[in-house]
Image (cartoon, rainbow, N blue to C red; front, side, top):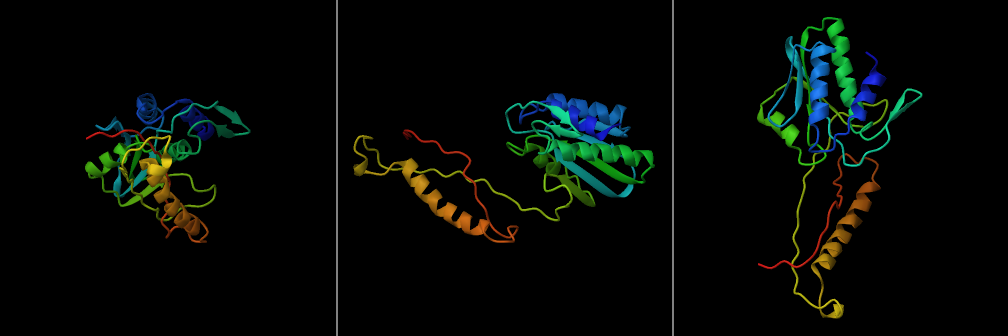
Length: 223
């Protein structure tokens, strides 16, 4: 098995959040047929799980198989793979699968769980299912892009907030009569962004709180 070809195959399977079924089944078959996993299955969330049975401690290799929407041309150029998800995060997923393949060849004695989770770029339902299923490995490695040579020890958490702004209505031709809800939202975001800029200037960003505005919408809201 060639790891570059493995990555190319994964990237060639377009799998935006909510449409991971094809790549999930392909990985399950790879785990059973070529990687010689002892078991491979889908859980209720659609995650694909491969298991190499062995002794404790258990090692979890967890990556996500979904991408953000938008297809890109897929190609190999001088052993570099290009395409949607090549970095985030099918390269780590390919690395985990290839790791299992190599460890099986040397009869590795410890238990390994390889998890390809769904919905990471969307609702996070895949990783929540792993938590619900009470998988408790002794060690865990999560496949997310950092750099070519470093391993990240620890990772920042996150929280998603949805804020609703309500203001008195006024005619758009007379904006001096009031402030729209969108104006109020942008005003708050301006303050948050100023804090963001201060945090971004710090050398050690791990201990800072960062924020990103991902969606804003406005209109009439009648209750």
